[in-house]
Image (cartoon, one colour):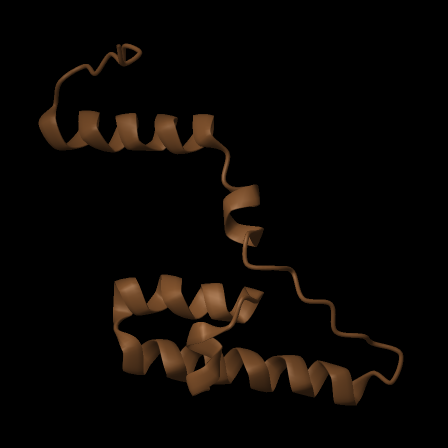
Amino acid sequence: MATTSRSDTFLGERYRRLARRRGRKRAIVAIGNSVLTVIWHLLSNPEARFIDLGPDFYQSRLATQRRERDLVRQLEHLTGKKVTLQPAA
C-alpha cells in the first residue's frame, strides 16, 4: 500500500484525495479495501479483466459548471444572500 501513494494510477490518485480529507492511515485502509474488492471480483469471475481508469479519472468526471453551481449554492446557503458571479479580469 505504501507505493500506491506515489503511483500514477487511479488508486494512487484516490489515495491522495482521501488522505487530504481523512488522513493517511484511513486512506491506506480505504485503498486496501478497494484493492481487496478488485481482487475478489477478478478471482470470482474468470472472464473479468482489470483496466486502470487512470489518475485523471476524477478530473475528467468533474464538470466545471456543475462544480461552480454547487459552490454558489453552498455559499448562498451559508450566507443567506444571493450570489452573482462575474468573470475575472
